[in-house]
Image 1 (cartoon, rainbow, N blue to C red):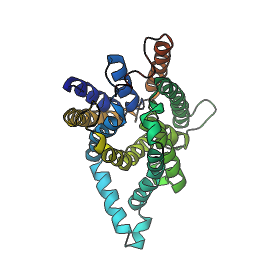
Image 2 (cartoon, rainbow, N blue to C red):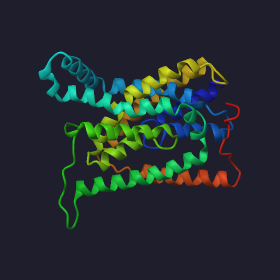
Image 3 (cartoon, rainbow, N blue to C red):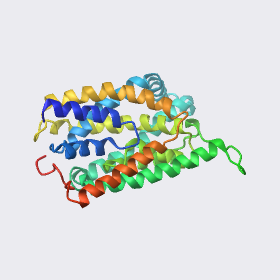
Length: 290
């Protein structure tokens, strides 16, 4: 991998990680369209450490409060009723599905799951799911001719059951094209949470999974065509761009709909099917060399 490739892929990772459009799909597609080698699951996981560091800094006050309360709850029974302490446990519980499936399906994640036809399918299907979830949220928030405004749930309403459902939604992002934020936000909206609550928990829930995945893949960073230098460079780029994107996105969702992302996902998915179907693009472009 050249330094130019790592620059572009780092920018793509930073721009797409927090948007509900699938960063892993865009890394895969960028390499395929440019005629580069597939950067691979290890490169994707390690560069996500950069964007996740942006989450740690952006939500540093929330994280410090949650971590502190969680540790105190280990010895103080009264603290176990504290919302922040409970959030700590719920993040741990919600991380179990992706941890188990990530290890179990490692070969599929690095192989069959990277087929562009599957990526296109997931872009379209999850785009429709996000659209439906967004529409239901908008209907509750604005009411209608024969409906009253319905109050949606906040993170204080989060239960163990909902935390596990969030976790299962996050695990679906092991397939490129699903989108970690897209799946978890959709799940949250369908369970009745506000846009802000769904997005915030989505980002907090991703921290253990992404950091663990990145550390686990460190041993493979120097293998194949991807070397350490470009990988670290792409990770730094992803961090800088990711921080700007997350700040923008958290403001965007308070007043705007997810429909632009829904339309984008569906159009991109259809375009991939057309390119693959007309042999302009191979469904395994770059894989053999990666």
